[in-house]
Amino acid sequence: MLKRISLEIIVLLCIAAVVWLVFGRHPVPQSEGETVEATPAPVLINTPLIDLALTSPVKVYSGGATTKQQLKLPATVVKDDSKQVIAGTRIDSKDDHPKTVTTVIDADTGESTTYVTTEPLPWIATDTRGGIGLYAGLKNGQQVARLQLRQDMLQIKNLHVGAIASIDQPITGSGQQDYFIGVGAEYRW
Image 1 (cartoon, rainbow, N blue to C red):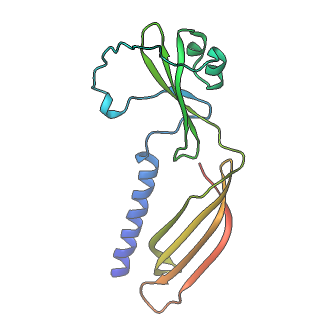
Image 2: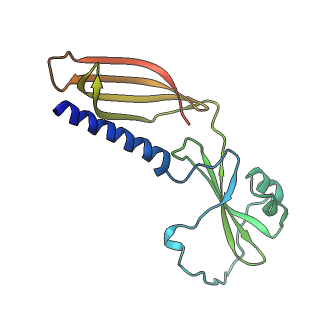
């Protein structure tokens, strides 16, 4: 009876994890090279904009259309000479794709717009992420607890190379402790 209840709980947790992975993750990552207008931070959504008279000129990046094109901004921004780049930064993101965030000011209206561009994955990069986890499940029909350690080392586009180690400890019965240590590659999407 206890085995059946434990198995049902494990199955329900697995189903919940799959549902969360498919439907609960947000937002869906942009495509490589796609540039979209950034959404304001939640604290700014209902905050009104006010005019600010500047005592000195605004500093913008030189290069005009060429700089805007290199930042992969929309064609309408690249062609408009009144829109100039005032800031830009590159950030790493959880979906492995680095992002470039660029802020453009319209010299005619004083309005600024921020854009986010998803950059391509690097061909080769070091990867220092890792993880440790504790799991419960079935192995050869027996309930086990698994301790697992993963360390990434290298990224080649979507392929991640690293090391993994796990120990399986039987929870019930008289099974033997089992372990695995190895290196390998994993394709991520």
